[in-house]
Length: 382
Image (cartoon, rainbow, N blue to C red; front, side):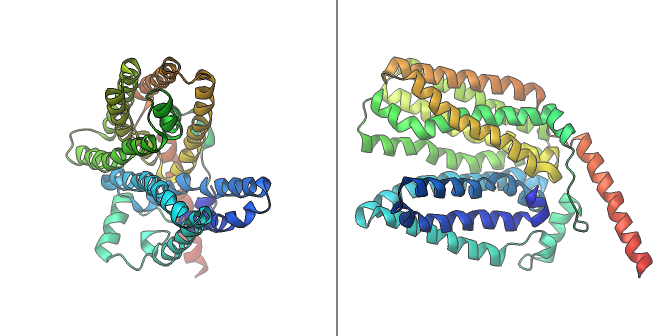
């Protein structure tokens, strides 16, 4: 909601800048004790929390429907590539310089990025001075010129919260993040405890699935748009088929990897499962923009809140299920993740939609009437 009022580009830039400045202050805060560091991390979480919802507000104004999947997937790929690179670089910096240098380097990089963002990026295509007239016309014709006077955005909350299509997105976000964050945070531990890898080797192998997933995001995004452009699938079919293909693939390969529990086969199964997660993101993660571009940001914020809750809850449950850290205990972790993916498969298959929702159309029509009222008032005053 703040993004719609203050400008999504401003909010996104502020989120990154705030996080980066706090990173620069972290070494200093460490001298004050754990309490100061925790406070810094909490504030960073608040700044970072705007990223996904605000990103959708940006895409709602910049991403033509025929390029929507590719653009969103490219941004997601940056997240995972950044995670891999930062982990590798952090180790090098800590060994060559000091642990403090990690925060100084990445904090400074974030501040430099913010300067570039503030100089180059504008809220809408109409305000951008770097794109060509042809590009601007293409984007505006694709999306429809929906910009009016500055006003409060009134989201139809009752319709959003009761929409089966929105519930499908929320459920899919929760189910996908359950397995994703579980693997992201605990995969090195699993490799060490269940497959007896050394800590250094487990870290390298644990990064591999996210590298392949980053590559697959580009492929999945391109295919999703291509199927729609060629008329092979409707938007609903693309979102449903890609998302559910991902969920059932992850369930199958996670279960298979747990049953085998053998070094090479299990690592291959985990890598395939995580890589197939790219197709889920071309489903639910883009779907908000299909349902209602004007409310895409708040819907993404809603579903991502549940996704974050899954990211918090899954490692906690894993700790409860693996008190002795044996292979048999870890099998149950994989079975639970597979079951949750299947729940997401069923809900998304039956409830997902790629169509502009009736309540969104009503909202757009109301805003059009209000905009005409502003224009008529202005002409009378002139």
